[in-house]
Image (cartoon, rainbow, N blue to C red):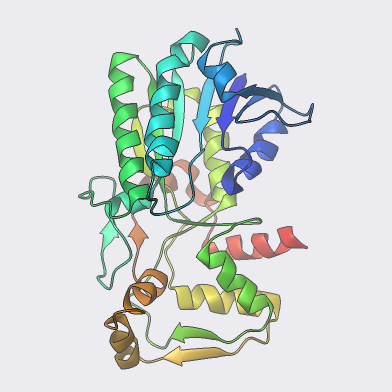
Length: 306
């Protein structure tokens, strides 16, 4: 089975490259900007790919490549997400490829808030950032291509992804805990929960797709760990598992609400500590008891670093 992947040098892509590359009977093709000095995998530059300089048949295309910024003053995000996706879709038929998996973002629903709301795949879409808006445009391009070019797709909408090598705000927060730097937490956080996504659950879903070709059946799927938890619980779990001496400074509800209303810090505190939950019934039905909890995912993450 020939599988092509973009974004293999990114955080999620590097994990999937190693995971898929070690599966039996899989020929992994990396679509890259510049070829690396490595013979581990087949490589095609984007120019080679777009000009169809290879005659290889691609059975499954996994599209991960994306700028990792929320806003840009130029066309970096638009061209790097929607533009790139459109160009890929145009040439898939030259490789006899009809199976396409796109990694989108839960941000197409909106941003973190103080409202206790859970987004499912039918929820109203309200992208705020340039990144989220371009992800949504790419989703629409894929849906159009599925009709015009007979492409079967899966669109995965992701929340906050964690794992070895992550370069996110969550990653910076965990580094602070490892260094025993004091961290603010919420004293009463029961109504403010987040969906997290372990790299392990992404691997499980991709393995399911590879093993069950018919699972790529024109769906949009929220994927996340088994249950959402508060950021405070996430921090406490990580602190306990790493035996960190980091001091956790609790903020009561009154102080937290005041902070969320301040001009400079308000958006930051809502983004970090606010509610952002994705309904994940579909992935639960697929993985069943194999779905990883965030508690288990944190332990796996710590073990992977050792």
